[in-house]
Image 1: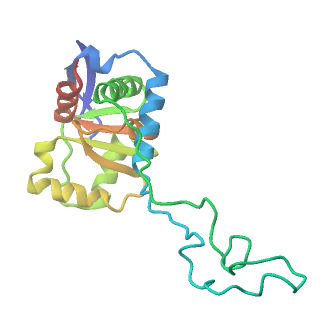
Image 2: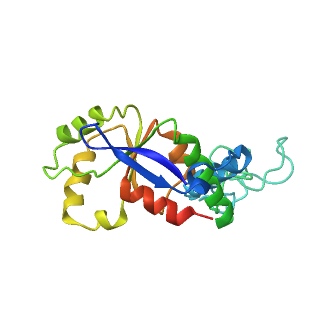
Length: 214
């Protein structure tokens, strides 16, 4: 087991939490992390891009001039690819950009990513609650724990189901540096690496340990 320091919302030490070493002290695997990031970014692509071929653009049903005798090159349609307003050759078509990554590989990548952030950016607080729902109150908490730059919030799933969580989420909506608000059981490797600071509650850290333990 490993231990991580816990802060309160005022930035003062509030004890330590015991976490499984297999999750928070995992070996760095750069190749696996790269695979996971590629798969996650690929899943964000909609794949709805589309260009019309010569069979789909309007017009071009009539032969522009007769085959012989004009001195010009023979043409069968004004919608051929080399014509203005013609179709596109080998253009993009709707497709699925997703990259398959096994669940065990993804979990191993999450363990490696979060282990690399334990000493550089991971901040564990006993609880995160802003009953007022005001952005200035949330900013005060971030300043007290010295969370700067892009911030990823990892909360407890049971807390997000409460009414108090609605006000806490509301206090985060006007902060441009907030990457995402997620739960411990649903982490993305890209977000873990992209964030300058990862603010996680004690309950969320415990959920991470249970979800990704070997």
